[in-house]
Amino acid sequence: MSPLQRLWPYVRRFHGAYVLGGALTVGYAIFFQLPPLLTRELVARLESGETAGQIRPVVAWLVAATLVFGLLRFLSRRTLFRAGRRVENELRNDFYAHLQKLPESYFAGQRTGDLMSRAVNDINNVRMLLGMGVLNIVQTPILYFAALGVMVWVNWELALWVLLPYPLFAVLARFFARRIHATVLAQQEQIGQISAAVQENASGVFVVRFCAMQERERERFERESRRLYYRQIEMAMAHTGMFAVISTVPALTQIAVLYVGSQFVSATSADLWMFYMYTLQLAFPTMMLGWVLNIVQRGLAGMVRIGEVLDELPSIRDRADAVDPARVRGAVEFSDLHLSYSGREASPALAGIDFAASQGQSVGIVGPVGSGKSTLVAAIPRLLEIPDEALRIDAHDVNRLPLRLLRSSIAMVPQDSFLFSASVADNIRYGAPDAGDDEVREAARRAHVLGDIEEELPFGFETLVGERGVTLSGGQRQRIALARALILDPAILILDDALSSVDYATEEAILKELRTSRAGRTCFIVSHRLSAVRDADLILVLDAGRVIESGGHAELLAEGGVYARTYRHQRLEAELEV
Ligand SMILES: Nc1ncnc2c1ncn2[C@@H]1O[C@H](COP(=O)(O)OP(=O)(O)OP(=O)(O)O)[C@@H](O)[C@H]1O
Ligand SMILES: [Mg+2]
Image (tube, protein in one colour):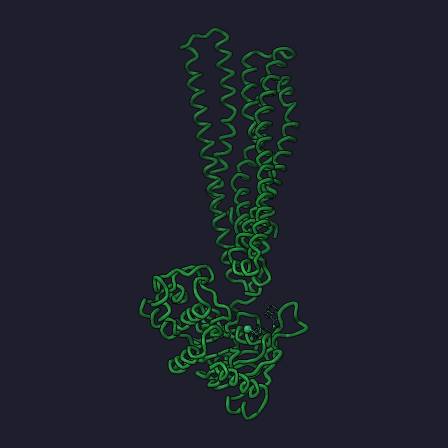
């Protein structure tokens, strides 16, 4: 789709505003001609010796025309700029809604900064195109042709002389517009560098400190800051240059009008006045010409960049052949699931997973780093794209379950829990915004974080946690994320190494709590600590995307394989610790 095709539906949605704005702009362009014409009339009458009483109507007309001209200018701009803002708003919301549908893998391969710049800068450029751009595209040609017509009609010779410097004027305008555009971009990019530097230093403050890199980071920052200073000077110079030209060239043209008009062309002083006014009035639209070309270019380029994201298909979405059971009960069955991440087809993350967990069972998943544990559990809520018939929930192919039902039936505590910058209570009730304080408290209790919240945090549940929850300890963060999952009371609960920063005794207590409160809930517990999965109904030992051992704890111990060896090893470690 071309950027214009893409924009069309938005323009159509606000067509009323665009039609009105267009009509007002045409009116403005017509009224633009009246002040010079009436001035000419006034001067002509003054010269012919008319009395004050006789010229009064012309003065009145001149005042009225100037007022209407100003009003139309205001209204046309207001209408079109508003329409541009409305499109911007819709477009930004559509962009965000689309991002929400894209799979996790899309964000993994995308720089956050780039997405932010599309959502902010590019959409801003589109808005300029649809406001300022449309205004000038409608107005400038009418303005020029009407003015030209009037000038030629009044005195064609003088008209030719007046128009002479305009090509030069347009070239200069284009030059400055380009220059300003380039310097603005360079400046924006540099601001991006500086914010990245500040952000990295803020997030990585520990690394900077313990590597004793403060001095070097400070120097790096000063370098970037100095660059920004130069970019800003360049930008200011480009603006100053433009304003110098914008005021000098018309002034010179006005002198030329007077000189040429009186010396070489037979023009009356009334004509001279009219031309004099036109040179002044046309200066600004001419200067704008350079801008408009830029605005159009930037707006279209912005729309292309937004379109790239909008074209990204949400690969994981509801299917036409979806089934709609009333609820998910929680039986999970994998049959020969193979899964590779794109670009890594040579080493599949999962290479044939086969197992079944009936409703209410608990499944423990262990294995070395990179063996596919997180990938396996991420397949259950369809966070990843999986082949048909490889995973069934309650005997339905998971790909045919409505995503909303599927995901609202599953709660997952991911490996690195993310907390929003909000209060602890709001973080816990994130998935259940209507949950009352009692429910929040109960979830915190079951996640064994109630004591921490009430005794250690300065404002208890109302304590604000920073971005990514940096004001909490790793273990507190993990248990708050667990409470967020527990409050949902899901049919299927997945803990992906979610208690790794919690001490052994607390982990035991939490798992015990989960077992007693489970009541028909299917649980998946991924862990590096075998003690966490010891009591599971089914334990899977993964290696390189395959299940190499499976069964109950006693069974696996008796087998004397990897599980048994690791278990003895970890128990020994635990005993040594105590
Ligand atoms: N988004 C991704 N893109 C490409 N490859 C990935 C991605 N996520 C994981 N992998 C790869 O898939 C394999 C399995 O990863 P996975 O995260 O499932 O392992 P894991 O068992 O959870 O490891 P850990 O114990 O470290 O959490 C690894 O080789 C990993 O490098
Ligand atoms: Mg993992």
